[in-house]
Image 1 (cartoon, rainbow, N blue to C red):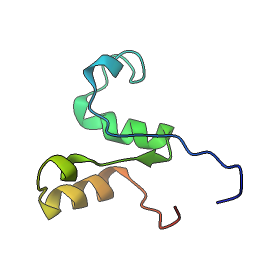
Image 2: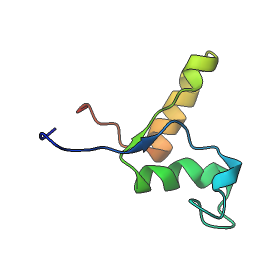
Image 3: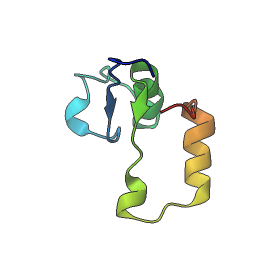
Image 4: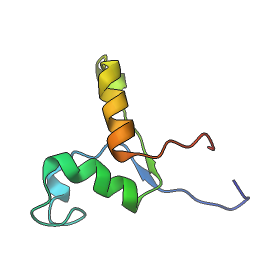
Length: 72
């Protein structure tokens, strides 16, 4: 990452208050991660902090919605 580069991200994607504000009105809940991943470079999946997630959940999020990058 170049000096002075700023990355903006979010610490999740399921926020009801964002519906009709950040997320377009009528967007299905299942499409929120895909929408957010196109709008922002970084999304923290902090669900693993609060509870143990199944490997299938990470695989589904990754293959369905995200491009995983090894550059931080």
